[in-house]
Image 1 (cartoon, one colour):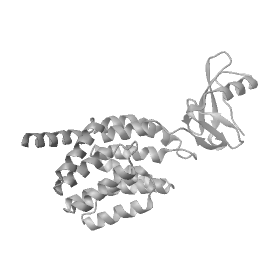
Image 2 (tube, helix red, strand yellow; image 1 turned 180 degrees about the horizontal axis):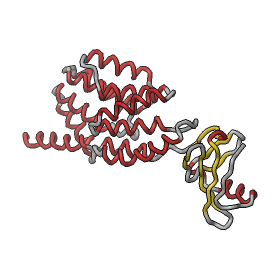
Image 3 (cartoon, helix red, strand yellow; image 1 turned 60 degrees about the vertical axis):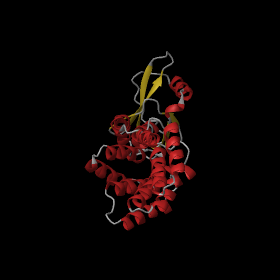
Image 4 (cartoon, one colour; image 1 turned 90 degrees about the vertical axis):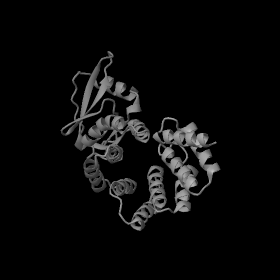
Length: 280
């Protein structure tokens, strides 16, 4: 059964009362006995999980549980995921890696326990490594994720990132690969990346109508809290420019600057708008 190692000796009734009253914002550990334990200060050492508890006197102690007695982890989504994704989109992949790296390292220690989110968080690290042009490290990590995770969405996301790292030389093959992911995925982030990748291929192949439709899919279907939106809008603006639609190009550029002023694409948009103004 449950193994308790108390650094501070507490009466059983006091320990249970304090554990029940703890803030569960850090999540809980679900034990095979059916008990739920607040996961405040969760740490792993060999075959033990340790959490922090407050004593009846207000001081802090620790309680440890054997991993064999744990059924599942129920932890909140780490805020570093959204933060790191935003930093990558803003061109600060180095800062993103600094944010997400320690979270990945911790999740690595518990990834043998059901309920961990190592693979999901490691995907963000893979994206940061890719943005930093650390291709071999990114490839190794993404292959590890794809081989480890049983989640179809995570597997698709890893497959897409690998495809973006080493895109097929034949544009037809590239589009087929992205289409396959689009038809299987339900994840907005994965779908956003795949549609932008399709837009990039069409644009490079001078298929401007197709490029526009691919890029426009992002603001039309995935408009909310999407850190990849600046890339999509820049693609939309480029497509309009190639189609000689100056009015919609300018409208999109101004939207990009107004809504995402800190994005790298906003700087490109400002430069393009200045060119237009200088011509008039």
